[in-house]
Length: 317
Ligand SMILES: Cc1cc2nc3c(=O)[nH]c(=O)nc-3n(C[C@H](O)[C@H](O)[C@H](O)COP(=O)(O)O)c2cc1C
Image 1 (cartoon, helix red, strand yellow):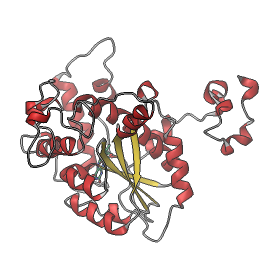
Image 2: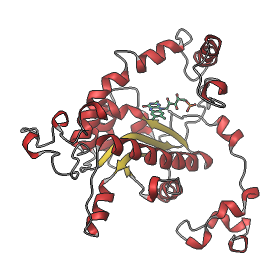
Image 3: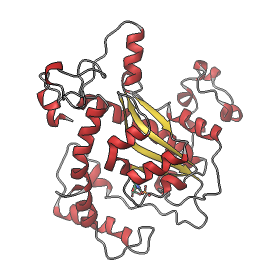
Image 4: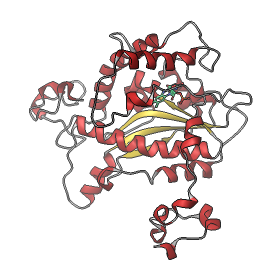
């Protein structure tokens, strides 16, 4: 293996599709920098230089890098849909409700999508049957797509570009999918703004809860009261003199805004179920056909998840 490894000077030109080049890291661990200190400093960028462009080839190279993320069963259940039409970007910004002007201002905007459609087409191409279910499609596809997207983000940030994931597309997911002309079996899960950070932007990242509340050594334990306080102490640091600005807010309000009974997540739940239905994830017999022809929704032609006799519907997703 080591005699196949190119010298360090050639690494920048690595052809990621060249099978003779793998597994490169095992042979050259010492040449790979320790990313931990760099990860500790990375930050979401929300303000972009609107005059600076990321060239198309750079976008392709960064997505190419993301493709080397691990993928469940080698199946690669994701696609990146590159939204290039300014009108569509404007519409997606509208559908994000508000506060995500970076969708229009970043040089490039991608939709990170679960894609089980390509798997279906691949199977059918070899005369084999495909079957998806909403929960597994959502879970496995989200894992695959997110890991690949993290690779794209790291590639972008390591090149000095700024990145902002956009979860606000979930506010109007069905319309975002329609605006992007996404067919059945393809579901966007977040957007990705890529651009050149605007001059002068603070590149301060948000704090994180303490390590001992996320790393459960030897088995899961609920955090103690002291550990819960330590989480708040850590996270409340972000509201002072920081990019988050507002020194009157406290983290419990942020948590409640997302996960309280009337929070974003609960409000998005119905929209997600609708989008899964619209994009065919409830159709257990194949992504274009209803799960049960007798019980399919008469208006939309989409399957009625609550009536799915295969047990794949309802609140499962
Ligand atoms: C799935 C996902 C969705 C996100 N959606 C948004 C968004 O819609 N708008 C935004 O400004 N930031 C968004 N972010 C960025 C987070 O707000 C950011 O990662 C978090 O505040 C921590 O900040 P840091 O990345 O600078 O440490 C999103 C991040 C993730 C992982």
